[in-house]
Amino acid sequence: MAGLAAAPRSLERIAALGGLEDGHPLEVTVVQADAFVAEGARRASYWDWCHPERYADTLVFLDPDNGFETRTQRGPKWVRHAEVKWLLERLPESAAVAVYQHRPRRRWEELFAELAARLDYASNVQVVYEANLAFLLLSVTAGVGGRLGHAAARYGRGRANVSSAALRRGAQSD
Image 1 (cartoon, rainbow, N blue to C red):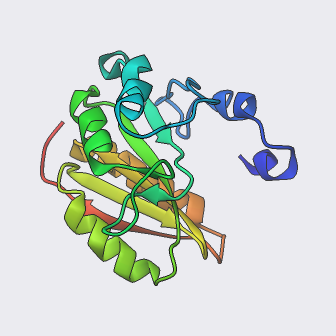
Image 2: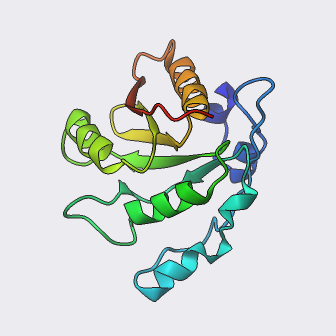
């Protein structure tokens, strides 16, 4: 992982990671890397590539320009809650979703409180964040949520500018 920061960005390098924990590999597949998420009917067709039932033991990474839609900000730069809910409901229970989130012009605590209330479709939500960006990790089972929480905490150890927290911890069993 440390080598990722030192070398040029590359989707191939991310795909080669394959997992964060020994004995728990993750499938890494890059799809739609160059696709633009449009509006209207064209936005809905963006998701045609996705067959969530095929992604057991997979962390599906969504990289909208800005993160989750907010009350006042919608459009191609934000992923919609309905889209993430659709994906999470169809993924196998062993899978999870990670969403990139850029910090808007307000405090993380305010945004995380709003997101925690809106993310009621995810039993477990972990967040790893620094000054201007965060990754929200969503799952539907306690076991996967625990693994994500462990990975988030482990990533933050020794990095003074990185924090992690649980926004939601569900009681749903594996």
